[in-house]
Image (cartoon, rainbow, N blue to C red):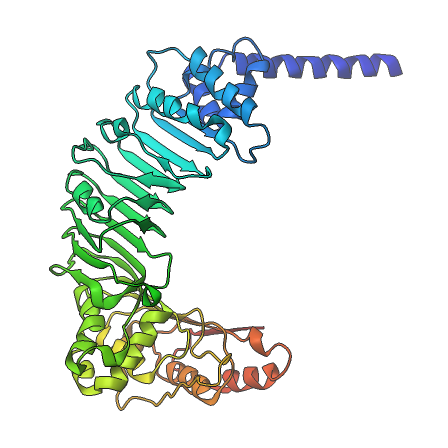
Length: 462
């Protein structure tokens, strides 16, 4: 009886295994290729040991990724890539080719691998190297007219030739690369008529001082300077002429050297973290125009984030010429989400003007809090406005304050929002800084405040 039962289980198990094998073997090639294409190329090749049915499939993968993550055996990595291209049929196209490596042992092979990829109607190319010396992208890459996306990362030298054939390029990203000339980047963009997404992230340049970014099709632009612009020997002048832009992100540049042509009427999301040069370097009437000039150019946005350097610059401008800035503060008719990141302090004037000029604001966030108590110079003075801002009584639903210290002015601000926020739904206060003392008193006071909105939930975290 016992042996018969075991026998039946074994038979059932055998049947299940056979059914499972049958299901895999009957899958069409197109579905099996999708499964393999979701794996790194090296792992996809390893599936050839499953069955003879799978062996030829990995050679037809449209997306190839070769990544020597640790560089422990560069000779083996080089042989693997060589063998892969040797076995792959020459007539097969390649949609995406990604190569990331850094050992100088196979530096002489890199050009050949890239050459084989771009010769097969390549659409997307991503190169990331960490060789001892800069790797210079060879001429034929710029002649690849089938490319739709190009990403160059890390230790790469970009010398852009005059004759570039990027008629289909839609995505262009440079990260930690070195340009021979920063002016050549602007010339390159002029030869990318359908480019929609462009970014420069912590790059360097050997010559030049002006970056011109022009493009009628450009929708997304990100610029991040890797060094402190105030410490640079010269500032990089940036001209932006992109009428169709929908996203703009600029960080660690100087506002005085950024010129935006026209109003970006299609802009929906913006992130600014730019600095202002020291007050005495410019006449008073120019000092405010530089930083607030950028704000006026992006007043069509729906989602706006201002970094700590920009918030500090705005507060300095108020100190310098309050009346001019206050009266000329732009209207933000479309703004629904505002994120202010405070490094030193958030002055009452900037916050008050934003509340008065953003009638449709729904979400207000201070992820870094309202003050920085790590220095002796911090201060935040909040006084209730003479009239309640329209956004507070009609639209504002969310208030989120991080790094709350429980100072008198911080408590007054929360009290004001709760007391007049007729549309408030959620108010979050991160008081984890007070977990070692004072938290209970702060929580008790916050919970005692009157809430104009009966649907408002107050969330205090420690």
